[in-house]
Image 1 (tube, rainbow over the protein chains, first blue to last red):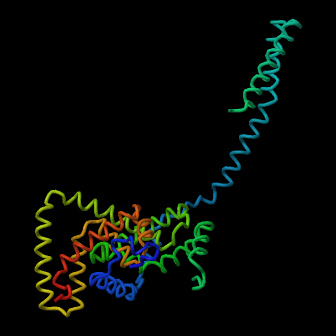
Image 2 (image 1 turned 120 degrees about the vertical axis):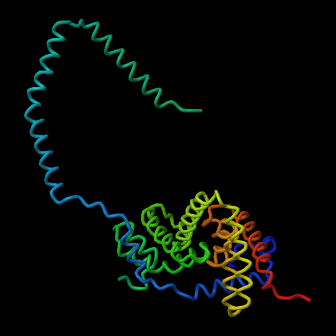
Image 3 (image 1 turned 60 degrees about the vertical axis):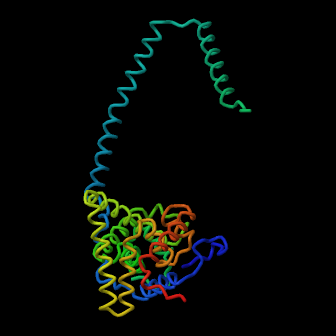
Length: 125
Length: 195
């Protein structure tokens, strides 16, 4: 038995006797008797999970689908963006905002962002 | 085929990074004998079961290669997986056989006693002693058997055995001590005579 890191004085199993000799000689015999591979490695390699291989057509198909999607988006986007701008203008036009209201909103937004920054940068004691 | 000077660490790196199955096959070839021998000891000489568990050990090692942190030698890590496979299998079998446990234990004891008698009469001393030791090991609890196999058969330190068995060093020592006491009782006929 390999007991190197354990001090023999504190190790209750270190007192050697006939059984230690018997176990050690049995272990020596077993270690000396190399077990021939006899196809074991091949069986292990066959039992390993099959690597995940993607079909060859998958990559071009994905690229083509992305291409179609991007083309669709680029065709639809100008009209959609125009619609959004038009609706926003109509909303603002319907509810005219006074200068004092705009200043108030700007002040409120500024105060909010400075408070948020102060909260984020606060020191924790 | 890898040259013999390629270390386990290099083969591991190739298996990990490049998903190199040839490198892993070389690791299996290198360690199959020691893992199978360890499991043959743990299964008390059941070679077929030991080989099945060895195969399971290497498949699990492949699946968990990324979790091997090199805090122990690769062979020690394999012993750890092998011992866990054996423990899981032993527990499963115990659950299946729980109904007729008393009969099984009685039969086992009878077979053990008759084996001892027969062995003394019929076989050469060395072979008989080996057979008796194998049978005596089968009588030990799982923890005791595993601790004795790791410390004696695999020649691990108590600390390495504790890593393999995933328990404190003190528990390993206790298992070894109790296991040896049981083995001494079972193998009392082989004890040298004292005046």
